[in-house]
Image 1 (cartoon, rainbow, N blue to C red):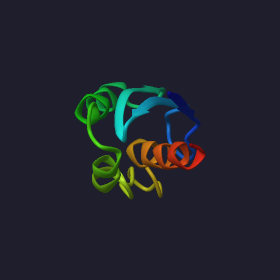
Image 2: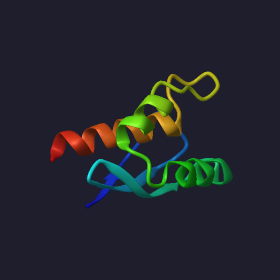
Image 3: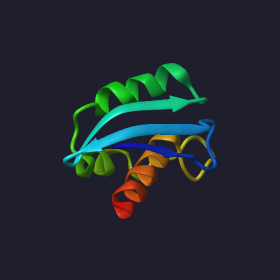
Image 4: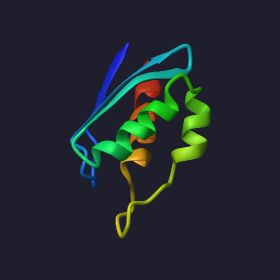
Length: 83
């Protein structure tokens, strides 16, 4: 199922992704640091959500309290709660 998350406090405006059997797939960031976020998406492709959360949760961007990667984790958590 395709999920759409509107992150807060970061440059990305929308994050979309699929979660299939606990595996994250097809991650797209709209807005933000395009090259870095493509890398994040490619590295996470096929990774269990639990592992992605462990690796990315709590990462900050500069002076901000969050980052696009951390916001992706928040989006995945929300998606899993809504199932």
